[in-house]
Length: 97
Image (tube, rainbow, N blue to C red; front, side, top):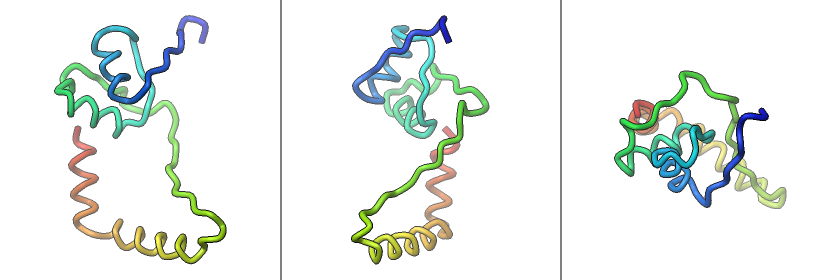
C-alpha cells in the first residue's frame, strides 16, 4: 500500500518499543510473540491488537530427511503433549493476554 513505509527492526522487543515510542504507527507480527514482548515490557495496556489476524500462518517444525525416525518420534510426542492439561493451561495463559 503506497501510504505505508516498511521499517525493519532488529528483533521483536525493538519492534514493540518502536510502536510504543511512535517510531511506527502499526506493526505486523506473530500475535503471541508481540503480546509476550508487550507484557514483558509492561506495555500491554498501550498495545491494541486487531480482532482478526492479517493472515493465518501455520507454524511447522522441519527435520532433515535423514532424521525420519526423529521426526516421527517428535510428531508422536507433540500429539501427546497437545492433549495434556499442562499444554492447555499454557495456551490459555498466553491466549488471554
